[in-house]
Length: 434
Image (cartoon, rainbow, N blue to C red; front, side, top):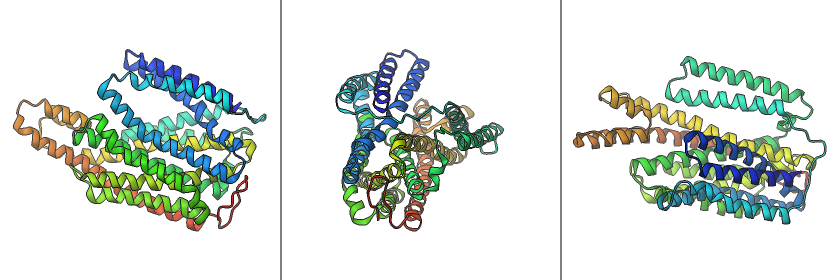
């Protein structure tokens, strides 16, 4: 069934991409993007479970997961680069059309090469799925709105309260359900919980960095989409290099040092951003910072992923893969929601102090992109530079404090595996970690 679900996901994602490319309205685009996410939900959990079944030798499996992590990292960096190239030289529609030949190739190779495997006792936890979607929606909405309004706003508090209540119902249901989508007993294993937390932090930092630096490069510093994509590439290169070295690092130093050390190395990359953060950052700081941050992520992700999959019986490999992918997607969403709310709150505190007419002030408070557009439309050109400097400094200050927060969290999280990870462990498939 895993192979079948992978192929179904490829077809759904490809057809949704075709629909998105042919969209003539924002509503249509959002609808087809939602359908592409539905297709991706079929694909992603199948990948790691198929790898676990295909590679039974511990060393080979570790290498395979390392390559999986490297490709994941490459896709995160190549996406903005290829997307920037397409937008710069063709039409935005081709951002989606490019998925079609890739989907055809993936479908053919999956049909030809991959073996079929399945868990006969597996059932769909539909109630759990609905509760999970509801509480994540309410929680994410509340966090984002808190950055725009405030934590004391009634709508924010109601949204967060609903999210927490539904989350409690979700946990109660999952603990009682015999075919739960999230078996909570897995979190009693430190070899599952700690790597899951590590992956969450890795993705949290990576998505947050790319999200804010993309705005910094294109809006504040004036780079086009292609140039912004090129500036983000060192992170992708770092992830690829780290993933290649990861397998040997685990053999030599053990999983705790590889996971924790990688996270701390990633924090060093963010530390470079902290000390060089400015409206016009030096190019070396951008390139070196992203390279080091990506390298640390690449070192941490493969042993974290392998530890998660090794903590789960082979028959439930699909559950482990789904949880790993859920962790990635949830961390990405929370990164944009939480860090975006934090940056926006600091940005608004600065912008509210600017002396301007109400119409302009409202535009400045909307976002850094809207602020630049509003300033550019002012008839008095002499005011442009002053207003731009104020809003850019406000945005930079938000990013500065976010990078400090990221550094502190990364260092603390990097220390965690040393004291709480089992000193010696053998995975379900035979790989000795320490």
